[in-house]
Image (cartoon, rainbow, N blue to C red; front, side, top):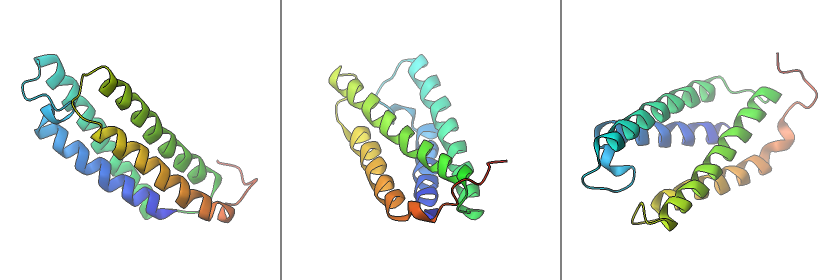
Length: 128
């Protein structure tokens, strides 16, 4: 289970770093308008922070209900981002499905890891 958090941390920190310094990568547009640059950098900052939080959670991981819910949230976010980016691709706003494949792929891998280890969580223990 810790692996989900570590992989997520690495992907999000790397993705955030790339988008902060190369905002045109978000939609693969070589010359985005100013609003696109601003939103891409803001998204980069957000996912960079999300990656740092994932790393901190990885370092302190325990099989509790709180961590179970966080892991399910990470899986759901990757799945939702993958579906959204597929819609963006279908609307011809990005020329390839790379983000879709990456996020859906991560969601599937994370679900498999989660299902393999889900019996280790302490059910019934309160979150706080």
